[in-house]
Length: 500
Image (cartoon, rainbow, N blue to C red; front, side):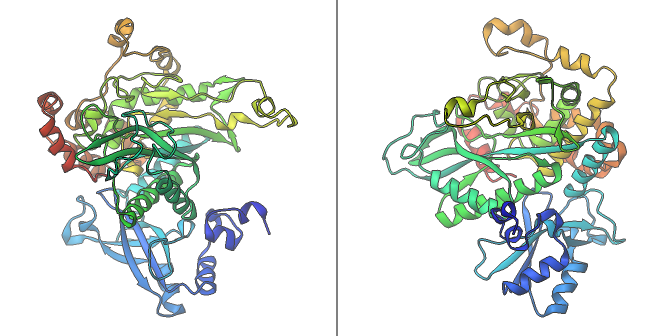
């Protein structure tokens, strides 16, 4: 028995003794029979960013084979606005590599994410999942490399205030119990997500915590490991579903909303990226950031005004993208710098063996730490369409390799100071700003849409739909209109509380 596979938290991986990427229909049928599973769920993301569910009772072996092979029909017009009711039928077909045991079902149930197909049996051009798949393929076709990603999923837990061991306001970063109230809930979420196939890096409490109207608001974060970008979106989608379901069982409320109230930390959805070739990370060369990484960053600098159209999708998003809230406002990048749009996190490029220094009994480890280097996009938040967002980032990074002046752009947009400090005002004035509203993001996407539509990645219908939705908020001056009106701000937060 493979020891590495046996240690997997994913029950199917451990039982079948193969990676999830190698699951076949025969594997799924075998697991269902051997574990007396009576129900199967198909799950698929719709335009509102939430997973939808279709339940099947297993009648007999022939029926199980039929649904796994052929999928089922669904009403596409109820899932996506761009599909007309007169020709709305779509097929949903399960992807076996996403199979997991539903931890919330009373009857033992196997769940799988699905792909959408049109009436001709072709993958639906405007489906979120297929858009991301096309973006990854285009990246590989242009660069010869693989685009990988992972997310930092921030959220607030809200419950009644018991008054015991009050946390320090806005000082919750990596806090321990009893000052952090929901560590046990977070670790329970992490175990459920891991069992569903999520590759988790770690979890912790975050900066944001406060009390309001007799309730505790505590910010938490679960961060993932980098995987192939399409898998990264699947994992984040399942994670949000798990966190909400488990919160319901605990009697807590949960929000991934970008802003909760004035003056308190909002929740982002930072996306880390790395570029791989032949199993090796290409982000570093000779211990410093490589040309490959800087070209990808240049592409993100160029298309940053449009990325907000995928990653910041309702009016509250733009109340988070303001100075002094650990969220970016300008288009720039830098090392270990949280005031920039794209951050190069602290890497393990030092030549010392820290494990041996901390543990003198250890022999030298010779661990290849170059694999750990990523770059981080800090503008997105929990309102994002996960598949469109990561697809947009794949497009932007690919675009960097197609720009003749990519390295010049990277050099011009690099900053190594906190741009929001008074002494750096001159530097700040030289930098382009991110859009300040949904309407502004829509305008930017309209101008730059050709890059996203290139190679057929984003369909024109999808881009049209995103622009139309963003403009429907009519929020061009909203941020300035209600910045000193807490009641209006609270009403806005409540309206978009369960976004994404």
